[in-house]
Amino acid sequence: MVLVLFETAVGFCLFSLSDEAKVNSPNLYKHFENETEANRLLQLSAIHRFQSTVEAVEGVTATNEGKLSKGLKQFLTSEILEKGGSTGAKGASAEKLIVSEPKLASAINKKLGIQVTSESSLMDLYRGIRENLASLLSSGSPEAGALDPRDLNTMSLGLSHSLSRYKLKFSPDKVDTMVVQAIALLDDLDKELNIYAMRVKEWYGWHFPEMGKIITDNIAYAKVVRAVGFRTNASSCDLSEILPEEVEQTLKAAAEISMGTEVSDSDMEHIWSLCEQVVSISEYRAQLYSYLCNRMAAIAPNLTALVGELVGARLISHAGSIMNLAKQPASTIQILGAEKALFRALKTKHDTPKYGLLYHSSLVGMAPPKMKGKMARMVATKAALSTRLDALADADSKSDLSAPTIGSESRAKLEARARGLDYVQTMAGIRANRGADAGSKQKSFSMEAGGRGYNVGADAPPVVTGVADDDDDEEEKEEEEQGEEDDEPKEKSKKDKKDKKEKKKEKEEKKEKKEKKAKKEEKKSKRPASDADDSTEARKKKKKSSE
Image (cartoon, rainbow, N blue to C red; front, side):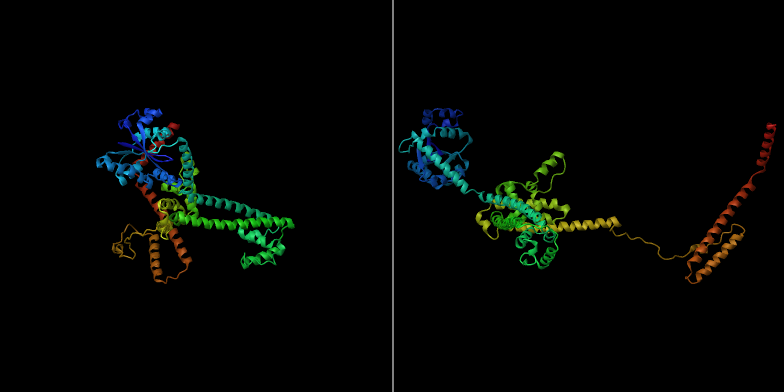
């Protein structure tokens, strides 16, 4: 016997299938074209009615999640196991159950031991049951629990409203929504606060222009304006709670010699009201920031420990929820927030961005400029792991003090890595500078003759080339004089050395001239007599030809 399990707004229904062979036939949809044919194929065997709306919501929610609820377990046990057991063990095992959800089918098979089938080819069967549900429920016997179709519509409407309320109330993303709204409001408050503070400075600057350079903090400026009012009251006001003593004295001295214009009482009242707005917005912003920190510590403790509350909240807000952020890979988290730059780079075929919202993280700020992209990639990897743990962990494990263990450990490792990258870059810069100056490598050792050796040429015999000239005699005398000078003390003036060098140059020039003259005379003397005769004959021929 084949039974079909179908969940409705009334309860769980069991339909008995008259012909098992028709389930696998490709023309199954034709049996549901008419109500009579549908009633022939399927008959209502039993129904488990929901006693209340809470039970209906729990049963339908468990079925959608693939879980076996208590009511369904009792219903299947009483209708299949007990009835099948009364007819015998063979009858209990022979009954088959058709279920639409595969997860629910596996749960029923594990817990109850019933033969369950759940195939995609059975979708036509459930589609036909859904279309003819009213006639199938009304045609059943009173013992099986026949139902009026009008009651079915009313129960369906009530169950749909209750189920929608339940999903909205117990949505897992509801806390993420609070974080998204809080970080969006925080950014809006920062913009508005900046605009209001600049308007206060411009407005009050006409009355007291020197105060803008003395007090740079916007909130302190608004508080001082609210406390002082007209600049003539600055000397009598006590500003110790707002400003330090040195700044207070400087402000009071500048108020006495200020060159600002005078303003009326009505103008000052409007300036006071604007200052009240600035102070109140700043106080509310501080409260909102503390609320956001508490929420982030409860939702994503590991991500908060790694990148901080603001960056973590902006990542969740940009992704939509913490579950969507957990589904993203590390490469997407790295450039999250820089989508425009990414698509512009892809369009123009330039380098893609290296970081997005993670640029505001303190870990990326610690890294040197050339290593920020590398640090952003490492932070994105650890952020992906931390987000997945926060998104899939239980609420009880998040509330423990040891919840952000992975985030804290990852941050400690990345800080050590950032210090290492900084050290490596500084050492590389030092080596590059040394290489530019003259190289930092140690020079190789080579033997060099540092001391004086034995003069072998002094033992060689003198070479005699001819009769010594007067110049040679002069050179010998100079050499003797030089030998005598070497014996003299080394303390001689620079002028004597210059004179000697000049004399040497003059003598060398004279020598060269004499050598040139001697060479020319040798050439003339070696010229043969025949050449001379030939030259005389040539001269005579020229004379005859000219005549």
